[in-house]
Length: 235
Image (tube, rainbow, N blue to C red):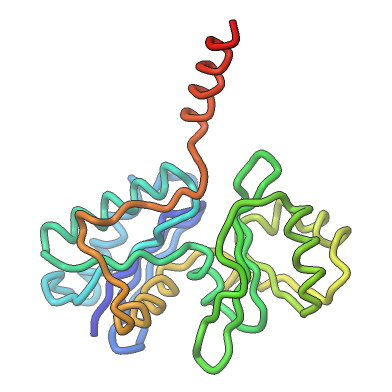
């Protein structure tokens, strides 16, 4: 089968083409441009380089969240547009699961969610299978460290939250741990596409119309509106 993978959930944007468990092409960038400027040009470049006829893909995989609200909307809109135009199914991949699919052992992806919180989850990759130990969620770095200490198992960290919370983790953790190297420590569209092959075989697909990102929490604009309404009610 042939899967197109898209990831614009965090600082990194990526497009990948996976066919029958082989990574045919991947384009990844972590630079100053917005994902709206990079995602479609990267797809164009991969299509031209591999002489890809988009009508021949079986499914479109997209990092479904959590992550940057703007980034998720860009990825979702791109995937939905392609899905509708090509009449292809979508496969929504939990962002932290895709990051964890980059490596093995007990894996803890952490994405900086701001406000002293992270998007995270815990996964175990063994025998070519990714099992979920903790479902992805939003929590403080202190709560994460406390929970991991209770697991009493070596953990490897990856994701853009590592740069922000590395020192705090070193201070709080009592279990053995390590940090993934540069080539596997960020989101990768290739991981989204590879995990999508597994999801596809398990029947975890959706139409383009059905797909919505999983933000895990409300946006800053929604929080501010709720706070204003609360103050108005109290006054």
